Image 1 (cartoon, rainbow, N blue to C red):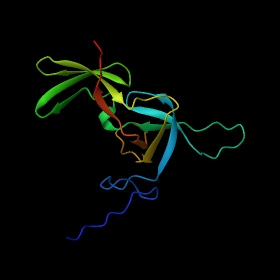
Image 2 (image 1 turned 180 degrees about the horizontal axis):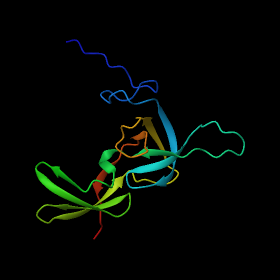
Image 3 (image 1 turned 90 degrees about the horizontal axis):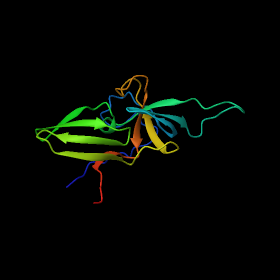
Image 4 (image 1 turned 90 degrees about the vertical axis):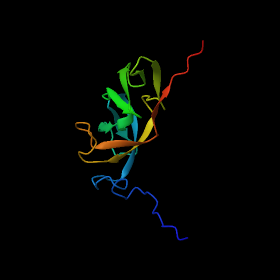
Length: 145
């Protein structure tokens, strides 16, 4: 059996496979502000003149953890979401069951993230960068009784 070779992802590629080619190289940023669908970050290693401030960059969050997602159908069941900030939401299943979910890994000011340039393809106005690391998801919040 012959296996196809897969080229490793590198910073010189124009984005992930199937991205439409609108991407650019990846860069690392430090989060300085957190909003519902995006973060604002400063590029790590940006060349600055003495006394010059870093240029803030708008970085779209992955679609799965954006707070503009009001509902979702999973396996034919409707779930509705109500957000309490960028790191917590209430998920209500059609029929009444409710659970509190948290974003893991949670967003924090000062956290380092990696993003790729996507030139008008992120789905977030004014955000030309899309966060790709760390991986984030919503998980049921553990509540000790």
